Image (tube, rainbow, N blue to C red):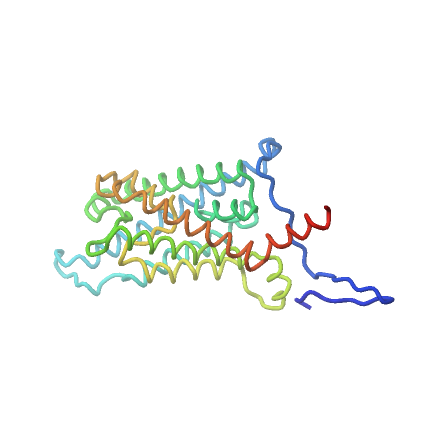
Length: 287
């Protein structure tokens, strides 16, 4: 089990797969707008992104407060550290993807949604509504974090993403592209129906590798950009903190993730899975 099986019967050969790829999502599906399942999914994306920003922003602020050496009794080694921040982001993604995967697919990230759209996993209408919900949820989550800890939020810059001193914008853009590629590539691999069939005996939840991907990328890129790889996370924090420097760097946290997600979708769907070759073969057989 787990592999394409070649079956021979009375001299005729045909292949029987033990998994089935879902059909590509339509580009426009106006019928979705009449279904409650779409709006339920949009609400789930909004709430999940809100919770994601609330927990992660407060984690960053808490670490900054505990490691602030200008406060008596604090040392640079206090707090959860960069490792703890990375765990907060990866852990929250694991939790939220697990909770919402059966409702919305557990995107919680416009880059993931865009990558799945490029890979024909979601329609344009669903993708647009998801991205709007994610951005609004991120703004509300960052706003809640500021509302609970206003003074610390302003003092420690609200956990915003920006290019760190000593790094160029080109380096930051490259970090966002590669980091998002790792995340979206993991999403495609973890949700691949062929992998699910082949590895059905392995009790690994899809949210687990996705959460670990977020964790590992944060370890690598926190020193460079604070790690975006999620335009909603970067945008929500920027809206609430609202600083000129933050807005100057904001394009990096949209362009980088979109490029990285697009490359990951094309790589997985059209190179590893050979969708382009299959489509060409189908076209030729029908000619």
